[in-house]
Image 1: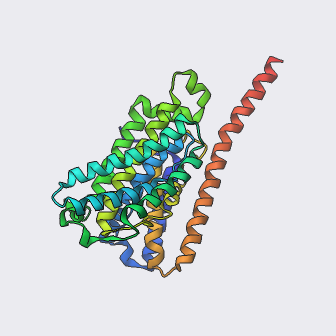
Image 2: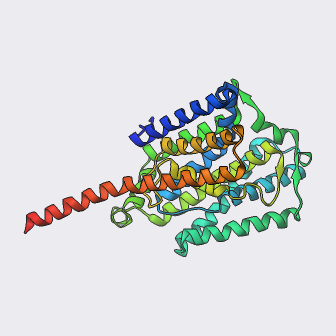
Image 3: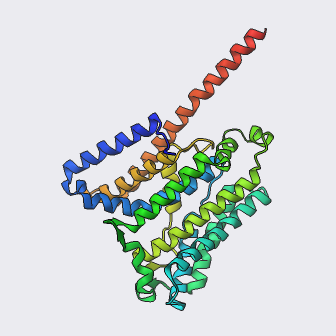
Length: 330
């Protein structure tokens, strides 16, 4: 099943295209195929983590611990590579995903089992996971010298001229598209976010879905942890610090409603691509790093305003129809 793009998503795609062409006029190298592949490669981790974060936001939740999960898992598998240099890379990747899933499951248990607010739980585990990195590594950094060649090789490999990171991100995107579009559980996420009370009366188990989505974000974060550390050849306590905000921003720009129940795979991918283009274009046209942060923040606020206004319209229509129905009964 190929997800159908909405009007808003087509507009976002057009904005990205126009922005790319304008930047290309200023810096022609930006339009080269090599730079385009670099942008996709550089944004691959964001693609995957934004899709996972979307499933949490659909249920009216949030996961602020994804970047800390990435960092902790990346550090653990780097230490594992140093201790067991002969370990096959598929086993390393599986270990990273299982570790990440366990960290995500902890969030889910606290949120679903103890009914604690997601923002409080994940803010707390964010700090815990960052602290554990420091404890495990003794405050030291691990560099490429501490990792095997095989460990470092996978993210830099290519298949048919396309970097492996892009292939992994594409596979994750297809999996999420099938899960959200074709499975009953995936559709249940939209039902819970749209109307939790009605979903509960229809037999949707909110706690089970919460356990699922937080474990899912953890699994993807764990995979991203290995890919990030292996690609850059470094692991330390502050790796990917603040990246959770970029992940959430990609979702919001892509049309995912922070109120839950609204979001799509194409929109989220476009939101991540937008940030990827901006991040790679601003330094190329000599924009100060301080202005880069300001511009990114302005874009996020604009996206939230657009999302909010688009959600007001159907709500106003529903209220108008309800008033008309009430007037008719009188």
